[in-house]
Structure formats: C-alpha cells, structure tokens
Length: 174
Image (tube, rainbow, N blue to C red; front, side, top):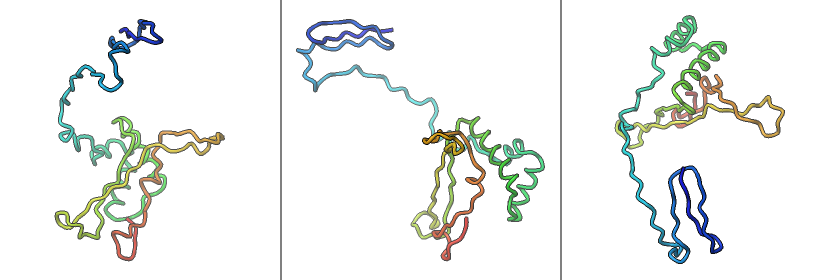
C-alpha cells in the first residue's frame, strides 16, 4: 500500500492506494513537460526466447499418446497413402490437438508452408509463408444479437483444402 500526494484546487491531499508511493511536484514546479520519473530496473529474461523454439511440439510421440489407438493407426495410414480422413476421425483429432494445445497455454496456431513457386531469392529459391488462426469462434447457436466467443478448434480448420494458386500454375489444393 502506498500513498499519493497531490495538489488540486490549491489544496493538498494524501490518498492511499495500491502500489508504490508517488509524490507529485507542486504545481509551481511542474511545467507539464519536464517531469522526471524514477528509473525502473529492466529485468533481463532468464532464458533466451530463441532457445525455447521447438520445445513444445505436437510430435508423433505426442500424437500417439493422445489419439485413440484406432484413430492414430487410421490417421498414419492416411498420411502415407493420401486417403481422406473420415469426419469422425477429424473431430477426434481436432479435439485431442485442441486439448493438448490449451494445456500448453496456446491461444492460436499457424499453418507454415513453402509454396512450390520458388524464385523468391531465398536460399534454394524457397519462400516460406504462414497462415495464423485463433482457437476461438463465435457461439453461433446463441440467440444474442452479438454472438459471444467460445474456445474451440473446429475440425474444418485443420482438414480443409484451400486453393493455392501461388503453388500450382493451374490452381490446386494444398
């Protein structure tokens, strides 16, 4: 608990408040431009943020531990054969990923990809791109005119082909 000394209408008052004690200069010593605030020590991060990259990844091992055994087997098979994943499996996979991500503190996700067009000047002619998305959506079933938000990761956001004209001359799906 701190105090704040202030002067208003030529009367001084002392007010108790949460936080440090703040002393404002009297009006005759404050020109409105040159108020010097005390230096605040900046704390250096304990760990370099770049060292934290790729430390929390939804890897194959995590997938195997989170998905039901049959869903994991069908999904792995679909990845190798290119067969479509059933909508029921998509829903289970999306829910497992959502639950795991929220446990990690995630609120958004990104699809990181390298278009096939090349020629961007980067090493090997590759230019990376990403699409960000949040793990929220409107509660469309609400009767309110302004729909409230809900935390979610709909399977359609993970398993949706979208055109990618930048990757394929004739347009295609990625």
